[in-house]
Image (cartoon, rainbow, N blue to C red; front, side, top):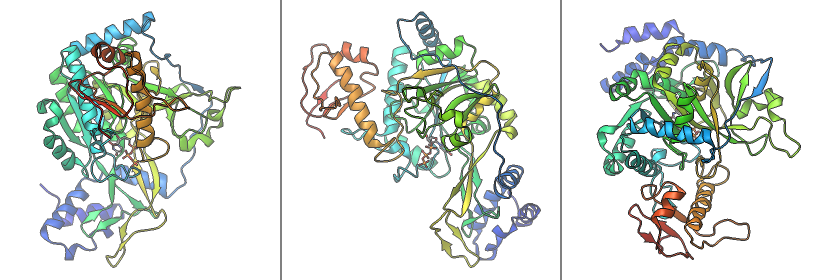
Length: 481
Ligand code: UTP
C-alpha cells in the first residue's frame, strides 16, 4: 500500500523535513503519487545520521596509528609459474560458468557532459561505436573463447534506466542474448542544504542523486541479482566501470589469483604517476584494507612520500576493477549500516519558498554517496591486489579533453593497438615522440589480445599510412576518419 499524505507528513515531521510537502495543495494526483513514492523510499535512519555527521557537525578526521602500502602482486608475466597457475584456474572457472559480470553504469557523467547514458558515448574514434558496444564485443569474444555464458548485470539509476535499456534494444543487445543481460536500478538519496534540510527540484520532486557506485552492494541483493547468480551457478563477479573503455573484463589471470588465494574481494591497481595524481590509494590502515581518496591525501602526508626518483612510495592507485564473491556481497549487505558514506559540496538547483527554481552559482548543499572500494575494509583474508599496466587496461573517460579524457584514451589505444599491429609485422606511422600518429581501432570481437590479432592477421597487408579500423569480421577499413 502506498503511503498516504498523513503518513508521509508524520514521517517527515519526525525528522524535521515536513517542508517538502509545502506545495502539496498545488499538485495533481500524478505528482502527489510521485512525491509520496519518493518519501516512502527515504531511509531516514541513514539520512539523519548523514546530516548529523556531515552537515551539522564538522566530521572528525579518521586517525590511523600505522599506514603501510598494500602488498601487490607484480604485473602478469605469462612465463611466471604463479601466473600460469592463475590463468589455468581462471580459465577453469570461466569454462565452468562460475563467472558473471558486474557493471556499474548509474553515474550522472557530469564531467563528460554527454546527453544520455555514459555507456552510449561513441568512444570508437573511427566507427563511433559506444562504450557499451565495446564491452559487449569483449564479452562475446570471451564467451566464444571459453564456450561459456557470462551473465552481465548492469547497474543503472532512475535517471538513465530507461535510456540504457532502449539503447540496448535499439542495438539488438550488441549480439548478446538478452536473457543474459540484466539491468537493475540503484537507490537514490536526498540532497540536503547547508542546514541539513531536504531540497526540492520541482514542487513534487526531491533533489536526489544515485547513492554512488557503492550502491551496487544493496542493489545486487535487493534486486535479486545475487539470487540469479546462485540460480546460474555464478559465485564470482568481475566488477568494472562503464567509462573504462579498455578494461579486461573477466580476466582469467585476475580471477585465478582471486580464487587461488581465497579472495572475497580483490583489486587491480596501477602505479600512480606522481604523488598528487587524482586517484585513490590502496593501503593498509591499522591492518585494514582501505582506499584513501585523493582529496584526503593531505590528511595522511606519508601517502605523498616519494622514492629518490620522485615516484610514490604508496604506488598502488585505484583502477576501480575488482572481483567480488556473491556471498561476500551478501555479507557486506547484512552489515550495510556500517558501510561508510561520503559527502560532496555541490551546486544543487532548488525551489525557493515561493516555488521559483534557483540555479546557484556556488555550492549550496550536499550530495551523499558510497564507494564500492569501501567494501574492501570488510574482507577477512589477506589483501589481493594485482598490479596492471595502464596500457590497454585502464583508460577511464571522465571528460572530453585533458587528463582521463576521450582524447587521451584514443591516443593511448592507438599506441596500444599500434604495438599489436607491429607485432603482426605491420609498419605503423609514429610521431617524433613515439606516439602512433594515425587513429587505430580494432574490434574486440575480432581480437582481444595481441596474440589473437597476430594469429588472425597472417597474410594481410603490412603497412598503414592512414587511419585504420579492423571490423569484427576482420575487414580493414582504411578510408574512415
Ligand atoms: P564516477 O564517480 O566517475 O562518476 O563513476 P560519473 O557519473 O561517471 O561521472 P561524474 O563524476 O558525474 O563526472 C565511476 C563509475 O561508477 C558509476 C559510473 O556510472 C561509472 O561507471 N556510478 C557512479 C554508478 O553506477 N552510480 C553512481 O551513483 C555513481
